[in-house]
Amino acid sequence: MISALPDVKITETTEEDDFIVVACDGICNSLESQQGVDFVKERLDKGMALATICEEMCTECLAESMSGDGTGCDNMTIIIADLKPATRATPAAEE
Image (cartoon, rainbow, N blue to C red; front, side, top):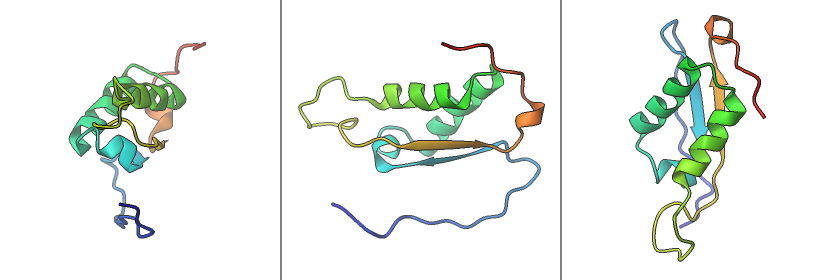
């Protein structure tokens, strides 16, 4: 089903918040919210670049088969906003 009405949640960030993940259903239907948070946090803690984390998450959610009978065959869009970039290790040079 296609909807022109997105899920919207308005909340204020706090000092405890590390990052924000905005993802479409192609990602959210493949991973539970906490799985997505854990996936991003583990990689941020290793100093990985945001673009690389986004790419790895899309790869993680990609269907093994394009038969269309499971998750991972949908469009995938993800944005990660790092709320504490100054406190993170500098990412290693990535190719």
